[in-house]
Length: 308
Image 1: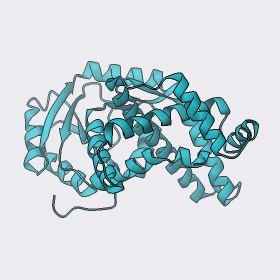
Image 2 (image 1 turned 90 degrees about the vertical axis):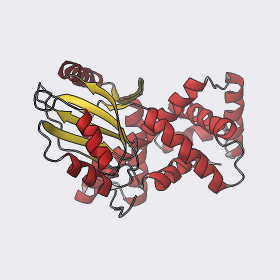
Image 3 (image 1 turned 60 degrees about the horizontal axis):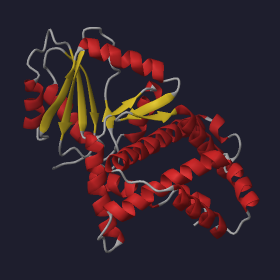
Protein backbone atom coordinates (compact mmCIF):
# COMPACT_ATOMS: atom_id res chain seq x y z
CA UNK A 1 0.00 0.00 0.00
CA UNK A 2 1.56 3.32 -1.08
CA UNK A 3 1.13 6.66 0.66
CA UNK A 4 -1.63 7.89 -1.64
CA UNK A 5 -3.58 4.68 -1.16
CA UNK A 6 -3.20 5.28 2.56
CA UNK A 7 -4.86 8.67 2.28
CA UNK A 8 -7.79 7.11 0.37
CA UNK A 9 -8.00 3.96 2.42
CA UNK A 10 -10.69 1.60 3.67
CA UNK A 11 -12.20 4.21 5.96
CA UNK A 12 -12.95 6.51 3.01
CA UNK A 13 -14.43 3.62 1.03
CA UNK A 14 -16.64 2.64 3.92
CA UNK A 15 -17.84 6.22 4.42
CA UNK A 16 -18.71 6.35 0.74
CA UNK A 17 -20.63 3.10 1.06
CA UNK A 18 -22.50 4.51 4.05
CA UNK A 19 -23.54 7.58 2.11
CA UNK A 20 -24.75 5.45 -0.81
CA UNK A 21 -26.75 3.16 1.44
CA UNK A 22 -28.37 5.84 3.55
CA UNK A 23 -28.41 9.19 1.81
CA UNK A 24 -26.94 9.27 -1.70
CA UNK A 25 -24.92 12.16 -0.27
CA UNK A 26 -25.40 14.84 2.36
CA UNK A 27 -28.00 17.27 1.13
CA UNK A 28 -28.69 20.49 2.96
CA UNK A 29 -31.21 23.17 2.12
CA UNK A 30 -31.75 26.59 3.60
CA UNK A 31 -32.19 30.23 2.92
CA UNK A 32 -29.42 32.43 4.26
CA UNK A 33 -29.76 32.41 8.05
CA UNK A 34 -31.51 35.54 9.20
CA UNK A 35 -29.59 37.71 11.65
CA UNK A 36 -32.78 38.96 13.32
CA UNK A 37 -31.91 39.51 16.99
CA UNK A 38 -35.24 38.00 18.08
CA UNK A 39 -34.84 34.65 16.37
CA UNK A 40 -34.81 31.34 18.26
CA UNK A 41 -33.68 28.01 16.84
CA UNK A 42 -35.45 24.67 17.09
CA UNK A 43 -33.27 21.57 16.51
CA UNK A 44 -34.96 18.27 15.64
CA UNK A 45 -33.92 14.72 14.81
CA UNK A 46 -35.82 13.67 11.68
CA UNK A 47 -36.01 10.08 10.39
CA UNK A 48 -36.52 8.57 6.91
CA UNK A 49 -34.88 11.41 4.95
CA UNK A 50 -32.95 10.29 1.88
CA UNK A 51 -32.89 12.96 -0.83
CA UNK A 52 -33.69 16.49 -1.92
CA UNK A 53 -37.35 15.53 -2.42
CA UNK A 54 -37.55 14.87 1.33
CA UNK A 55 -36.25 18.39 1.99
CA UNK A 56 -38.94 19.84 -0.24
CA UNK A 57 -41.65 17.86 1.56
CA UNK A 58 -40.49 18.99 5.00
CA UNK A 59 -40.27 22.63 3.96
CA UNK A 60 -43.71 22.36 2.38
CA UNK A 61 -45.13 20.91 5.61
CA UNK A 62 -43.95 23.99 7.49
CA UNK A 63 -45.13 26.52 4.92
CA UNK A 64 -47.66 28.92 6.33
CA UNK A 65 -46.65 28.60 9.97
CA UNK A 66 -46.28 32.11 11.41
CA UNK A 67 -42.85 33.24 12.56
CA UNK A 68 -40.71 30.71 10.66
CA UNK A 69 -37.83 32.53 8.95
CA UNK A 70 -35.37 29.81 7.87
CA UNK A 71 -35.26 26.02 7.61
CA UNK A 72 -32.04 23.98 7.38
CA UNK A 73 -32.32 20.27 6.59
CA UNK A 74 -29.24 18.03 6.81
CA UNK A 75 -30.01 14.62 5.33
CA UNK A 76 -26.63 13.18 6.31
CA UNK A 77 -26.97 13.78 10.04
CA UNK A 78 -30.75 13.48 10.19
CA UNK A 79 -31.10 16.93 11.75
CA UNK A 80 -33.37 19.84 10.90
CA UNK A 81 -32.98 23.37 12.25
CA UNK A 82 -35.90 25.80 12.21
CA UNK A 83 -35.24 29.49 12.86
CA UNK A 84 -38.33 31.27 14.14
CA UNK A 85 -39.62 34.31 15.97
CA UNK A 86 -40.84 33.09 19.39
CA UNK A 87 -43.27 36.00 19.64
CA UNK A 88 -45.10 34.70 16.58
CA UNK A 89 -44.67 30.94 17.05
CA UNK A 90 -45.24 30.04 20.69
CA UNK A 91 -45.99 26.30 20.46
CA UNK A 92 -42.96 24.58 18.88
CA UNK A 93 -44.56 21.16 19.28
CA UNK A 94 -46.60 22.06 16.18
CA UNK A 95 -43.37 21.97 14.16
CA UNK A 96 -42.53 18.49 15.43
CA UNK A 97 -46.05 17.28 14.60
CA UNK A 98 -46.14 18.87 11.13
CA UNK A 99 -42.89 17.21 10.08
CA UNK A 100 -43.97 13.86 11.55
CA UNK A 101 -47.35 14.05 9.80
CA UNK A 102 -45.58 14.68 6.47
CA UNK A 103 -44.01 11.22 6.73
CA UNK A 104 -40.75 11.98 8.54
CA UNK A 105 -40.90 11.16 12.26
CA UNK A 106 -39.45 14.14 14.12
CA UNK A 107 -38.30 14.66 17.70
CA UNK A 108 -37.29 17.98 19.25
CA UNK A 109 -33.72 17.89 20.59
CA UNK A 110 -33.49 21.40 21.94
CA UNK A 111 -34.66 24.99 21.58
CA UNK A 112 -31.99 27.70 21.44
CA UNK A 113 -33.08 31.09 22.80
CA UNK A 114 -32.30 34.36 20.97
CA UNK A 115 -29.63 35.18 23.56
CA UNK A 116 -27.96 31.77 23.26
CA UNK A 117 -28.20 31.97 19.47
CA UNK A 118 -26.34 35.28 19.50
CA UNK A 119 -23.65 33.71 21.70
CA UNK A 120 -23.32 30.83 19.22
CA UNK A 121 -22.77 33.28 16.37
CA UNK A 122 -20.29 35.38 18.36
CA UNK A 123 -18.29 32.28 19.30
CA UNK A 124 -18.33 31.03 15.71
CA UNK A 125 -17.01 34.36 14.44
CA UNK A 126 -14.14 34.41 16.92
CA UNK A 127 -13.16 30.78 16.31
CA UNK A 128 -13.35 30.95 12.52
CA UNK A 129 -9.84 32.37 12.34
CA UNK A 130 -8.34 29.18 13.77
CA UNK A 131 -10.93 26.43 13.11
CA UNK A 132 -13.33 25.60 10.28
CA UNK A 133 -15.80 23.57 12.35
CA UNK A 134 -16.41 21.65 15.54
CA UNK A 135 -17.66 18.08 16.01
CA UNK A 136 -19.15 17.67 19.49
CA UNK A 137 -16.43 19.91 20.91
CA UNK A 138 -13.60 18.55 18.72
CA UNK A 139 -12.29 21.56 16.80
CA UNK A 140 -11.03 21.01 13.25
CA UNK A 141 -7.99 23.21 12.70
CA UNK A 142 -7.95 25.60 9.77
CA UNK A 143 -4.28 24.69 9.35
CA UNK A 144 -5.23 21.05 8.69
CA UNK A 145 -7.90 22.13 6.22
CA UNK A 146 -5.43 24.37 4.39
CA UNK A 147 -2.82 21.60 4.10
CA UNK A 148 -5.38 19.10 2.78
CA UNK A 149 -6.84 21.62 0.35
CA UNK A 150 -3.42 22.61 -1.00
CA UNK A 151 -2.52 18.95 -1.51
CA UNK A 152 -5.82 18.36 -3.36
CA UNK A 153 -5.18 21.40 -5.54
CA UNK A 154 -1.68 20.15 -6.30
CA UNK A 155 -3.05 16.80 -7.48
CA UNK A 156 -5.54 18.59 -9.74
CA UNK A 157 -2.80 20.77 -11.24
CA UNK A 158 -0.63 17.72 -11.90
CA UNK A 159 -3.50 16.03 -13.69
CA UNK A 160 -4.90 18.98 -15.68
CA UNK A 161 -2.22 21.68 -15.83
CA UNK A 162 -1.10 24.58 -13.65
CA UNK A 163 -3.76 27.00 -14.89
CA UNK A 164 -6.79 24.75 -14.51
CA UNK A 165 -8.04 26.39 -11.29
CA UNK A 166 -7.92 29.86 -12.87
CA UNK A 167 -10.72 29.10 -15.32
CA UNK A 168 -14.44 29.44 -14.56
CA UNK A 169 -14.79 25.65 -14.45
CA UNK A 170 -11.66 25.47 -12.33
CA UNK A 171 -13.07 27.87 -9.78
CA UNK A 172 -16.21 25.76 -9.54
CA UNK A 173 -13.98 22.71 -9.09
CA UNK A 174 -12.03 24.52 -6.38
CA UNK A 175 -15.24 25.18 -4.44
CA UNK A 176 -16.08 21.50 -4.70
CA UNK A 177 -12.61 20.58 -3.44
CA UNK A 178 -13.13 22.86 -0.43
CA UNK A 179 -16.45 21.19 0.35
CA UNK A 180 -15.00 17.70 -0.06
CA UNK A 181 -11.99 18.39 2.16
CA UNK A 182 -14.16 19.98 4.86
CA UNK A 183 -16.65 17.10 4.76
CA UNK A 184 -13.87 14.51 4.96
CA UNK A 185 -12.32 16.20 8.00
CA UNK A 186 -15.71 16.45 9.69
CA UNK A 187 -16.45 12.77 9.02
CA UNK A 188 -13.05 11.95 10.48
CA UNK A 189 -13.87 14.10 13.51
CA UNK A 190 -17.05 12.10 14.08
CA UNK A 191 -15.05 8.86 13.99
CA UNK A 192 -12.39 10.21 16.36
CA UNK A 193 -15.00 11.32 18.88
CA UNK A 194 -16.54 7.86 18.87
CA UNK A 195 -13.12 6.31 19.40
CA UNK A 196 -12.35 8.73 22.22
CA UNK A 197 -15.61 7.87 24.00
CA UNK A 198 -14.74 4.19 23.80
CA UNK A 199 -11.31 4.69 25.42
CA UNK A 200 -9.58 2.85 22.57
CA UNK A 201 -5.95 3.89 21.90
CA UNK A 202 -2.72 2.72 20.25
CA UNK A 203 0.56 2.98 22.13
CA UNK A 204 3.59 4.81 20.72
CA UNK A 205 5.57 1.61 20.12
CA UNK A 206 2.84 0.17 17.91
CA UNK A 207 2.48 3.43 16.00
CA UNK A 208 6.22 3.60 15.33
CA UNK A 209 6.38 -0.03 14.25
CA UNK A 210 3.48 0.45 11.84
CA UNK A 211 5.08 3.57 10.34
CA UNK A 212 8.43 1.82 9.87
CA UNK A 213 6.67 -1.09 8.14
CA UNK A 214 4.71 1.31 5.97
CA UNK A 215 7.87 3.09 4.80
CA UNK A 216 9.68 -0.22 4.21
CA UNK A 217 6.81 -1.53 2.10
CA UNK A 218 6.95 1.59 -0.06
CA UNK A 219 10.29 0.37 -1.44
CA UNK A 220 11.97 3.71 -0.66
CA UNK A 221 14.61 4.80 1.79
CA UNK A 222 13.38 7.05 4.58
CA UNK A 223 14.85 10.12 2.85
CA UNK A 224 13.25 9.17 -0.47
CA UNK A 225 9.95 8.57 1.25
CA UNK A 226 10.03 11.96 2.99
CA UNK A 227 10.81 13.66 -0.32
CA UNK A 228 7.90 11.90 -2.01
CA UNK A 229 5.63 13.16 0.76
CA UNK A 230 6.76 16.72 0.03
CA UNK A 231 6.17 16.16 -3.69
CA UNK A 232 2.56 15.29 -2.88
CA UNK A 233 2.08 18.56 -1.01
CA UNK A 234 2.56 17.44 2.60
CA UNK A 235 5.31 18.12 5.10
CA UNK A 236 6.57 15.01 6.85
CA UNK A 237 5.53 16.02 10.38
CA UNK A 238 1.97 16.54 9.17
CA UNK A 239 2.00 13.25 7.25
CA UNK A 240 3.12 11.43 10.39
CA UNK A 241 0.28 12.93 12.39
CA UNK A 242 -2.21 11.99 9.68
CA UNK A 243 -0.74 8.47 9.48
CA UNK A 244 -1.29 7.98 13.21
CA UNK A 245 -4.86 9.26 12.98
CA UNK A 246 -5.79 7.01 10.06
CA UNK A 247 -4.09 4.02 11.64
CA UNK A 248 -6.05 4.58 14.86
CA UNK A 249 -9.32 4.74 12.93
CA UNK A 250 -8.56 1.68 10.79
CA UNK A 251 -7.54 -0.46 13.73
CA UNK A 252 -10.58 0.59 15.73
CA UNK A 253 -12.91 -0.24 12.86
CA UNK A 254 -11.27 -3.64 12.35
CA UNK A 255 -11.19 -4.58 16.04
CA UNK A 256 -14.39 -3.00 17.39
CA UNK A 257 -16.88 -2.22 14.63
CA UNK A 258 -16.42 -4.75 11.82
CA UNK A 259 -15.77 -7.83 13.96
CA UNK A 260 -17.66 -10.81 12.57
CA UNK A 261 -18.12 -9.45 9.06
CA UNK A 262 -17.51 -12.24 6.54
CA UNK A 263 -17.19 -10.20 3.34
CA UNK A 264 -16.84 -6.64 2.02
CA UNK A 265 -20.58 -6.12 1.64
CA UNK A 266 -21.13 -7.12 5.25
CA UNK A 267 -18.39 -4.71 6.34
CA UNK A 268 -20.03 -1.89 4.41
CA UNK A 269 -23.43 -2.64 5.90
CA UNK A 270 -22.09 -2.83 9.46
CA UNK A 271 -20.06 0.33 9.06
CA UNK A 272 -22.96 2.20 7.46
CA UNK A 273 -25.26 1.43 10.39
CA UNK A 274 -22.62 2.34 12.98
CA UNK A 275 -21.54 5.53 11.22
CA UNK A 276 -25.14 6.69 10.72
CA UNK A 277 -25.76 6.41 14.45
CA UNK A 278 -22.53 8.29 15.13
CA UNK A 279 -23.67 11.09 12.80
CA UNK A 280 -27.00 11.38 14.57
CA UNK A 281 -25.27 11.76 17.94
CA UNK A 282 -22.65 14.24 16.71
CA UNK A 283 -23.22 17.98 16.91
CA UNK A 284 -21.47 19.65 13.97
CA UNK A 285 -21.01 23.42 14.04
CA UNK A 286 -19.41 25.25 11.11
CA UNK A 287 -17.37 28.29 12.10
CA UNK A 288 -16.60 29.09 8.48
CA UNK A 289 -19.93 29.98 6.89
CA UNK A 290 -18.48 30.08 3.37
CA UNK A 291 -17.42 26.45 3.75
CA UNK A 292 -20.82 25.58 5.17
CA UNK A 293 -22.50 27.09 2.11
CA UNK A 294 -20.05 25.26 -0.18
CA UNK A 295 -20.88 21.98 1.56
CA UNK A 296 -24.59 22.59 1.05
CA UNK A 297 -24.23 23.44 -2.61
CA UNK A 298 -21.84 20.58 -3.30
CA UNK A 299 -23.73 17.93 -1.34
CA UNK A 300 -27.26 18.46 -2.60
CA UNK A 301 -28.54 15.26 -4.08
CA UNK A 302 -30.15 15.21 -7.50
CA UNK A 303 -32.02 12.03 -6.65
CA UNK A 304 -35.67 12.07 -5.72
CA UNK A 305 -37.64 9.57 -3.70
CA UNK A 306 -41.11 8.69 -4.81
CA UNK A 307 -41.71 6.51 -1.77
CA UNK A 308 -40.03 6.15 1.60
